[in-house]
Length: 187
Image (cartoon, rainbow, N blue to C red; front, side, top):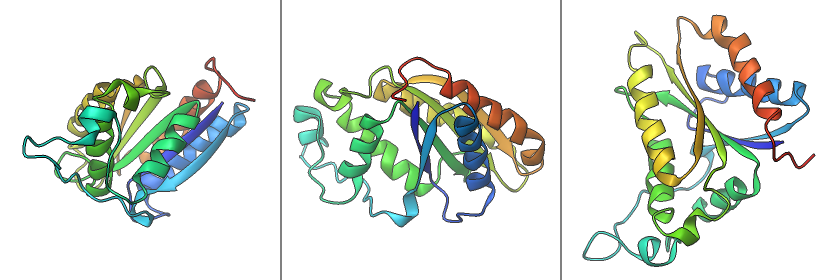
């Protein structure tokens, strides 16, 4: 089982990265592999709503016309056995880098050609809240909605608060081990 772990945090040592690392560690312990991608290190523009009707090639052809790192990351996602989306929580919602990615991904997935190798792919969402931590559940709902719209099989959504991150590390590792055990492994 090879998974791509997409991290929407600017801090490679922060809480969101720690949560993703715990899932990756469990994945490796379970016999899988995992590649971590930090979204802020990539150039992923927000959707331009190309045509006058607010759509574009995404709806007609299942592809995006913007020339940035989106297409390459979408191919990594298509080539993986599973995907983990890890986002810090801002205002009870996704980080801006995660929102830019998921907004474009769901538009591409509107067309059947855009769903190729995405439809039915298992995905786990991690929403890691700082501050009071109360926004993590609402963020999970938002992330689950967009991933479901893309056609992923959302197998788990895990809300995490800064106050309980250390207590959830074992559960995050267990989620990675479980993910490694799913059918479809390339190993």
